[in-house]
Image 1 (tube, rainbow, N blue to C red):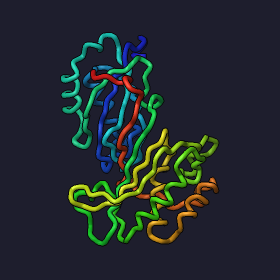
Image 2 (image 1 turned 60 degrees about the horizontal axis):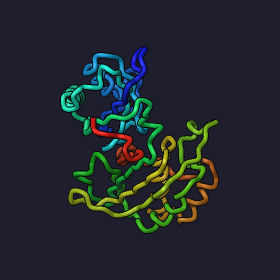
Image 3 (image 1 turned 180 degrees about the vertical axis):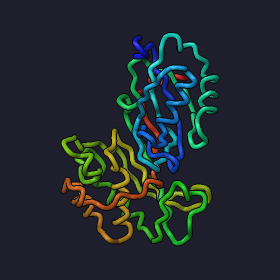
Image 4 (image 1 turned 120 degrees about the vertical axis):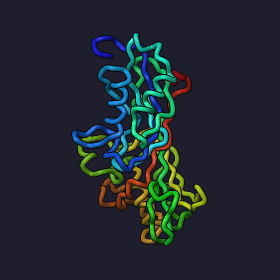
Length: 267
């Protein structure tokens, strides 16, 4: 619905943001959030109230390079110029938000519920040297990590499982905690001439703090404090206390979202 009228289409916005300056994606009273900044920009550009739906809420300090947000559009808005609207949104949003694409979808499309897969990357700079280019989007871990052991341990988490051990305990009360992880890999990469440990995970949906807790657990293996079998045991325990710590938010980036082919077309 747009006001009292049925929506005639859905505007879908692809955006990125640097998470350091935000208290997360979702709006919170008196706090700076991605949704709050984007909603204010849209309301100024469209001159009406706007309610937004995102593909996946991110916590304070978490970044995104390809977040998707959907908004129902009225019949009178279907002829809006994409170039003009995008320029308006770029001008109206702060420098730590990037509007990278505008798309059209059917009226009942939801950026959240129509998402097929979501992908995240967690970056770790392991060693004594302070990261330079990756400083604001990687966890500086002052030690050595066994990447091969971490990747071996990670495979126990691939597939459909109850991930209660890997989410914020308070968020799991009386809620389903089964999720499907299609791929999970730990590798060494080079970005902007810096060597990093990258943890790439893809799944249909994620619980609160799930990715960061998986990372913290795998780091316990990588630093030699636990063996690979411990990760499988932590998963089976279905108890948050059985897994490792939650990794810092700054290393996590929301990388991409998959939708059905043809679901989104350029506005």
